[in-house]
Amino acid sequence: MKLGFLSAGLLGILAAVVGQDRLSIGEQFVMSGKAKADDRGKDSGEAGRAPSMPMARDPSVAVAEEYEAARRTGTREAFELFIARHGDAPLAEQARAELKRLSR
Image (tube, rainbow, N blue to C red; front, side):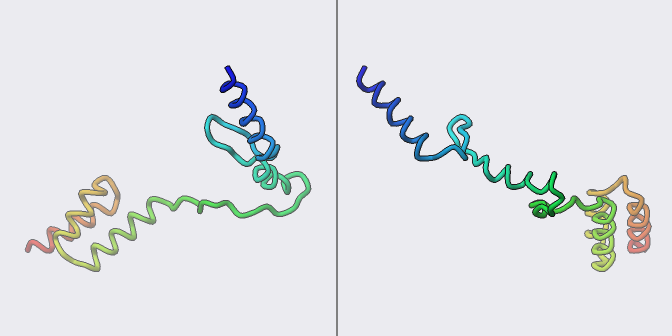
């Protein structure tokens, strides 16, 4: 029974030491002060921090870049790989035409 009181006491001391700016979620502690700092500028019109993740790229741009890389390489293997990855893309028809031209 003493062990239970000791554990509860140690947990209480740990909570006091950690402080109120942290919330316990399961076994991990999460800082709530940082979340409040990110929301600070929303109402006051202040500029907030930039998002930590960049915007997602347009998939068609990535496909076009990959086609250009295959075209610069100019090998059957490069065009076959492009077609295998992007067989439904509009540039796949151009890649197939390049394969036919290479096989002549």
